[in-house]
Length: 268
Image 1 (cartoon, rainbow, N blue to C red):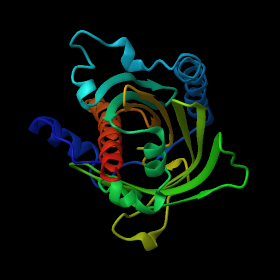
Image 2 (cartoon, one colour):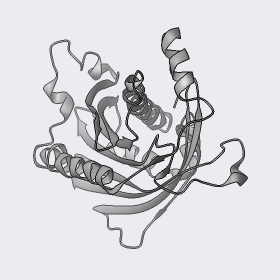
Image 3 (cartoon, one colour):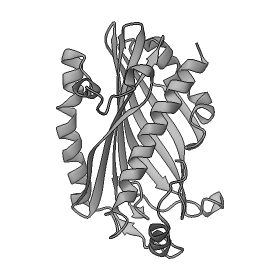
C-alpha cells in the first residue's frame, strides 16, 4: 500500500518499535478461531441482505454524511472493527464507490483479468496470476489466484506470497458478488533477497495472518455501485501504534476502490 503519514513523534515511536529487531509472532488456534467466528457472523449479515434485497451499506448513509460525493464517484469508507482479540487483531473496513456508465460485465472483465493486475493495482502488487477452475458455471465462476502483495510504510517493507479461493457469483441480472478467501499467506524473510525464502505460515512478523475480501456489485441508473469489505487478521496492535492497523486497512480498501474504478473506466 502507499506510504503512510503520521506526526513526527509517532513516526519516531513506530521506528523504535518496528525497527530491525521485530519479534516473530505465533498464530495460535484460538486467534484463528476468533477470526473465523467473526467471518461467520459477517457472512450471515451483509452478504445475505444484499442477496435478498440488493441493499448496500452505503444506502444507510445520507444527508451529507459518509456518502457525500458518492454519486459523483468518490469513495465512501467506514471502519467496522479494529479490535484486539485472543492474541490477535481483526481489522474490518467497508467502502463503496460508484462508476457511472459501467456494467457488471465491465467490472467482471477487469476483476478476472489477472494478467494485468500489476498494471491495475501497481501500488500493492508485485506479481499476479489466476486460473478458472473446472467446476465453474456461468452463475458461479470459480478461480484460484496467486498474488504477490507488497506493503510499504514509513518504517518497513513487507512482501507476501498469497493464494486465494475466489467465487464470482451472479445473483440476478443486476446483482453480482465476489468472495475471495486467502488460503495461503507466506511472508518473505527478506523482500530485497527473494532467495532467502519464506517464514513458515503463522510464524512470522504477524502483519497479515488471514484476509477475506467481499465485493457486492449492482447496476443502477446507468452506472455501477461497488461495495468492498476487507477483513484481515494480524498480531495484536503494539501500544502506541494501534492506529496503524486501522490506517492500513482503510488505505487498502480505498486503494482497491479507486484502482478498480480507474481500471474499469480505462477499458470502456
